[in-house]
Image (tube, rainbow, N blue to C red):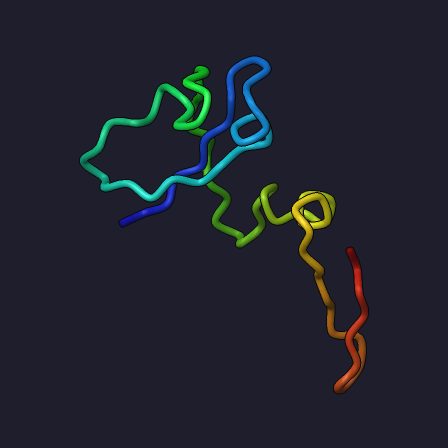
Length: 80
């Protein structure tokens, strides 16, 4: 099943204001409400390049994750 990206229309809650992903069948209708706050949401185009705003450095840092980037052979640098 594909994963679709949604974002709030308007203010929204913490969950939908920055965007969220939802696994759905291709036959399912797009979501119109946030599963957490019932605020209005819209489906946003997915980027096929592998980049997702949900995986941006600032968003990862806000969620408590650490991102490491390979600098040299066997050496990694913390970017978040």
